[in-house]
Length: 263
Image (tube, rainbow, N blue to C red; front, side, top):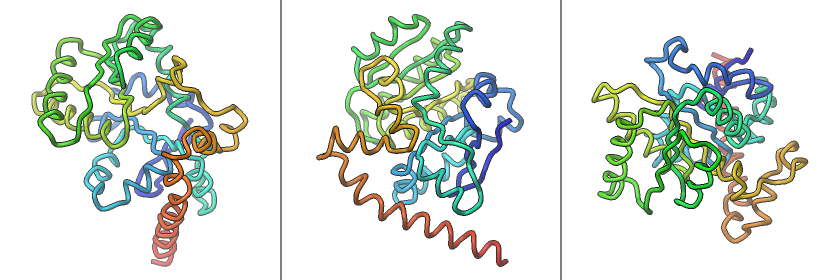
């Protein structure tokens, strides 16, 4: 049985593996207090936790705190949880969640809307499972006319197709804001909401468009080293300079924990 551990402002799922909570995820509408929570699955890694702590992302952070499922995708988050004696049982990645949820949805013939990075990738997913709709948005920035148009098109897709799940595979924070805007519009129109899963590149790993790090690096929490090796020009700031921001975030959390214990 899984638990939830409050850490860094979020209620993280603490489980030894995804199988412990996948049944609840597949039947999310029957979770207690479902109506008071956000029908989202998010898988924040260390870089995203640092960004969510920044002032420009505080509104997004406050919304995402309400998510039904918050999975600790970053190994440093798990290490830190053990350091401050609020241990998370294991790292739970979106890349490992995707195939499990995808296969169960296929078995039950449940509808899925997948927001993909490009149409060719969407066709690969359709070859694997035909009860889906894929939508590849053009390049957009948040809070622009293009963003509004994409949101409206997706709202109409959801009304027509009525998917149980919406899996979004674009970059942070675009996928989160896109899903939040759509969910808010559906709620205002009193349309039942699907479960929104913010899974980044997980679907791309599943169909082989992108390659994950070797298994031994995954097990020791060093997938970031593989990405740094493949894309040093793009990733060095995140993984080298980002260490200092992450340590600062952990330091603030430790200070907060100490004051709470004293009080």
